[in-house]
Every structure is written in structure tokens, then in C-alpha cells.
Length: 85
Image (cartoon, rainbow, N blue to C red; front, side):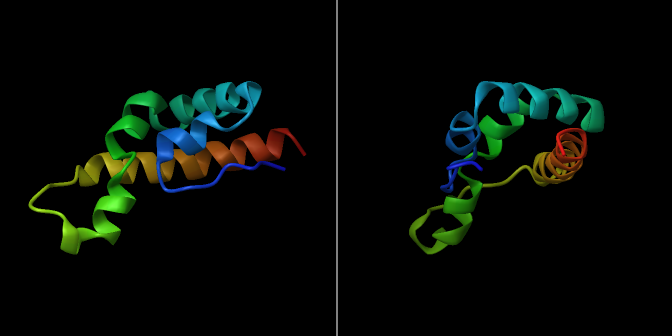
């Protein structure tokens, strides 16, 4: 059971146990061919920016990065869960 919560993706990931972080990073690389940390950093505050867009002035999102992050994390977490059940 994890206590990870919040909207900042980098902070949520950092709150996971180090072995869990390492396993998810490894599975993410295998699933997406990309490193997880840079995408987490890039997309870290996208939820907050989108949720509170009326308070933001301008801005843009890397939709390709979001897609890669979402698909890679789904695949990585599924693989991690399968291996750790």
C-alpha cells in the first residue's frame, strides 16, 4: 500500500519506495523506450495547469509527451503488478 498522492507527478513518484521507483522506471523504459524522469518533470504540473487554466496566461502542453507518459506508465505499472503478485 502506498501513501503516494497529489497532483505533482514528480512528487508522487518520489514518494514511492525506492525499489518500487526503480522497478517502474525499468518497466517504463522497456515499455516506451524512453526515460521516465524527464517526462515526469516535463508533465509534472500539467494537471494543475489544465485544471486551473482560467488562472493561467498562455502556456502549452507536449501532447506527445503526455501520451508516452500515460501509455508507458500504464504498461509499466501493469508489468510491475504482474511480477509482484
